[in-house]
Structures are given as structure tokens and as C-alpha cells.
Image 1 (spheres, rainbow, N blue to C red):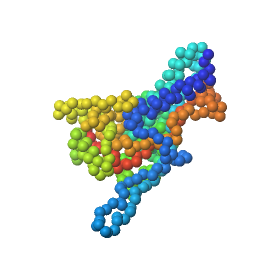
Image 2 (tube, rainbow, N blue to C red):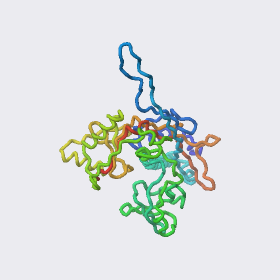
Image 3 (cartoon, one colour):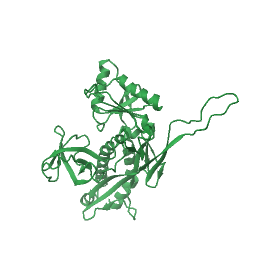
Image 4 (spheres, one colour):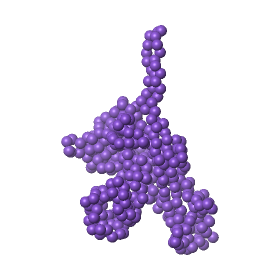
Length: 393
């Protein structure tokens, strides 16, 4: 007979390992390449010594002259708070009772919930990898009583719960659930009544519920030329600034080519001693590159990546597209310089009694929550590159 105790044991002993592996390796090809470690985690923070430059104690001299002056490695300390990542499932009491005499029905119930959790996590964690940690999804350009017009719908999906916030994160309206999306017209419908056209002039933004400045420090935070990163001012540490090249001709977008890609790779190799091992771009940029290869009758080689992903090859370097990469953009990365620092791997939140399934307060439902405390650090931002201004096909 299936009971809550049975369900609790199944989540801890059967599903946790499988779901953790899926969340770590199969939801995004870039995440699958990033090393995960518990090193450099101190309390609630990541504190990491990052070497930069080279040792200065090198020199040549005469047979009986002075030896070179010692000058050791240069270090800077990165400081970053661990982010709190959650994934929640909910099962109704009615559904549990309906399947209590059928183990097969109960297994299907749990499978459906876990598959939904992995699907939602794939979307949200993939989005965070390319974000700047702010949680911003889109800028609002207008609204009616229950429809919001935005500048982009790339980061939005039906079912998401979002807040309307100012550019500094102050909440204007919270917990709106997206019920439908018109992608052609860049409008979303929400399950709440809004003040007619109140958000247009203020240029408010959509943010994941309660997530302002609480998300992973993704590529959007790294590819900037000013401000701070990991607690350090880029004005004082120029090696925190990546290689960024806009290839627009005047105001016109330009086709991507092997020469453009190779120039960025050479810049990283020569100036940062960094070797690109992963290229990711928007789908339109990938199609543009495929058109370039086809125009020169070049074969398009396909690579199989960890996690079951496939990529086309640029001189043996995997090139993939991702829906969350900004339009007209290509990233060239040395993924060996990235680490996901974590307090622990995915775990179920447990009560004092050791149970992971708990009744929702005041409701005939039960919830279980996965949690991970982690964030991503790039050890050498100057060893990464971004090309913009690329024409999309």
C-alpha cells in the first residue's frame, strides 16, 4: 500500500540521484561543461584567490652579477554570495489517495512531477547561465487590463510566476502568472487585472517572482567593461574585462565567418593565454554560420557532447545555439576557467522529523523542495570573448 512514508522514501532514495544528475548534466550543454566543486566555499560565501599576470622573478644576467629580484604571483580575491536555487513539486492529497492501492499509478504520478521539475529547471537554469544575476526577464513597453507588451519574449514561458519591478528592483505588482504568450506580437497574458497602460511610461520590467538580484552570476554579468565583478572594480583590474567585438559595418549587421571567429580565438590565445573550447550563439547566428559554410561547400561536422547534446564543429571546437543567447551574438569560451561552487549538491529540504514531503499550510496538498546553494565564477574573464553585430539568418 502506498503511503506518504513510501513517497518520502522514494524521493530520497530513488529520485534524488537521478534528478540531480539530470539537473547537473542534461539541462544545458554549457552547464554540462562547467566543473562543479565545493572548494572555496566559506560559510555563505565563495572566497577564491584568483592569480593574474605572471611571476616577475625572471631575468637574465652576467656570470657573477646580481640575481633577479623576486616578484611572486599576483592574486586578487573574488567574493560572491552563494545563491539559493530551489525546485518544488506539489502533489494533491486526492491524487495520493487515488493511487494508494496501485504502485504503478503512484510511480507514474511521481514520474510526471519529477519530469515537470526537470523541464522547468532546464528552462530557468539555462536562462540564468546567460543572465546577469538580476532576474530581469524583459522590459515592459505597454499594457492593457491583463496583457503586457514587452521588448522580448525569449526569457518567458507560459506558467511562469513573475513580478513587475522598477529598474532597481522595487516591486510594483507581484506574483502574476503568465497564462499565454503571443510571440509574434511580444505580448503576454496574465491572471490578474492591471491598471490600463500604467507601466509604459515608467519602463518597468518583468522579474522572476522574488528573484531580483538573487540569480546565478551568468555571462551577462561577466561581459561588461565597467562596474564591479566578484567584488572587484574593473577600472582597477582590467583583466576582468573580456574581449568584446562588435562587427557591425556602420549600422549594418554583418555575416559571421571563419576569419572573424579565428581572430577572436587568436586574441584570447595571444593576450590572455586562453584556449577556446566551446562556442555558443543564438539560433539565427548559427544558421548564418551554416549558410557561410554551405556557400563555400564546406562539410558540416557534427560532434556529440556530454549530456546527449550535439554541436557543429569549428576546427574541432563545438558550436551550439541556445535560445537564451541575445540576438546577433556569439560567445567564445574557455570553459576550463569556469567553476560552479556549491555548498552541496541538490538535496531535499527536510524537516526535523527527516521528512521531505510536507503538507501545504491550509491546503489539501503536499510539497517537496529541492535546494542547492551555489554560484558560478569565471577565474579569467579576460580569457573569454563575445562577438556582436552578427546578422541572423
